[in-house]
Length: 322
Image (cartoon, one colour):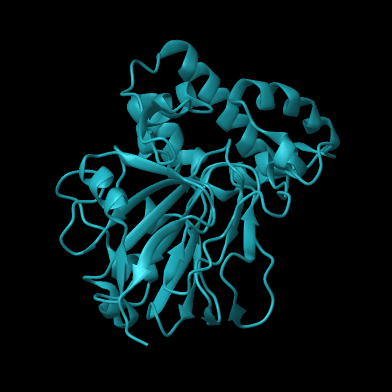
């Protein structure tokens, strides 16, 4: 513990000195399509200056590689968000980012993480129950690809490395030319994730890794992040959609990924788990020819724009006849 505390102190000193001596500079705004209205929006990024500095500044990049990506930093900060005094941050955060607590099951919280992992009232996120529809597993911003083997991922010329992501070259063969959906949860989003389909759930695969940010600011610089960060996934075996990979990916300042489901049966729209403090990502992989992702999601991604969605919305349909 003493070693970890020393590392944290050194990390903070380096970061503060670096921020003072080396400004972060300008960053390209993150734009996205609000699906409900079709409007082009600009994201208000929590901790934007910090992220730009880490990924666009020489001192920041050194700090990132040496310390910030390490588990002990995220665990330490995540632990702070469990403390009672962290609740003092909630009112300012709610006001700054316009968070609607009227749909939350409660409005008084014991800590910031208690607020961050809040549950919503029943019916706040209607789930499309058409049996041939696959729904978004959470609130956030989506990138979608019809063929992960052909499409550029975030950065032109970069492909999503399926074998490395799954850490299983044999299993990966089923998904090399299948569909990919990446749902990015911002710190301001509802942070519980849900099953997108009904099916049988496999034993989870847990892959240890780093804790890089999954914000586009970071992805523009380090496309390998999804294959380097801590992640865990299951296969949800279905009749209509084939075997769907559902993976949760950790990120900087994510205290932990908590799984809340029990048993081996997935029910569409039912909670699977939640992320503690920090933004993170849910990744879905589909077998080739089993699923058709909605055209607006594919088109927006082709135009280098994410699409904002809510949990329970339709994002794809099955192609398997029953």
